[in-house]
Image 1: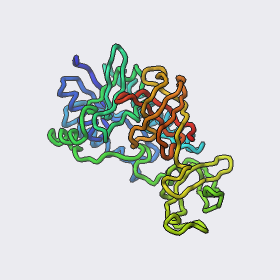
Image 2: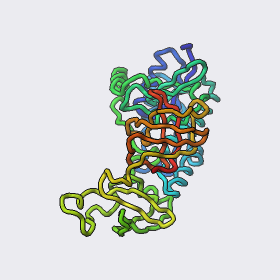
Image 3: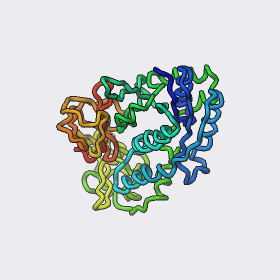
Image 4: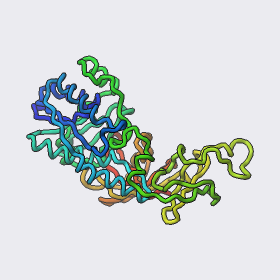
Length: 367
């Protein structure tokens, strides 16, 4: 590859640090940018952005590259957080990481990098880009345990044309080995989990600041009231912990264990302000063989033809064989051979043809 000016998003984590190192060893001119996306309460115990910047700056120092601290908090609040709250208020469970990639990391950050005269940008995501006859494909990262193409499925041709994923070809163990070998200060830093603006804080406590909620009944699949919920926004389909009815046994439960089966959130009725729960992981209410999605985004720029493909309806699941019907540019429907568990409106359904990520959409309904 010809030598380029590459602007790297340096997060303070080991993946972006090794990405910057790899680009520098390839002879590129590397400039680091630290993105600050949240500032409402970044002085509290849960928000790590200050420490992350210190880590990013010390990595830049070791690598001998300039670093700039850029504040995207206003963009983030308008484009990601407002949508996140709207979705929760409507009873759905959004994925802010997908939105953050589409709206901040590969829009606001990309625009900023281009103003700095960048040829390309790079991040520490585990994914790959392949060019084929002038078109760009988004591929899974080679480490199946770390592949992040699911979160990147809304990237467009113009974004992929200007993006590098240096660690996409590597396994995480190799990334950590390289970091230790070159003496990076964050070589052993643990991976961040959780949503960037929430960090490790209790989720319900965080949402409580922003959403007004009305308590209401919790009913089981036979219509019996088994408890009271604190507000529908605070629950997600498939949720097991924190429902607040853990010790309850329904009257007349059969002997032999079913009375002890755990409760799961299975449905929400927003109009009636009712939460429905069922007992047992394999309850029929938790299984879906079809879904419809809207707000679709296709990597190629238009919908793929009807075909037998694979899909993920949540990040950590393995690919599930599915049939894509005639898809529109903004909506599609999938039918699965095997029932999928707790398919959740608001989450992303992402389609794959082998290792190629085709795009996806926001789950609207499942049955």
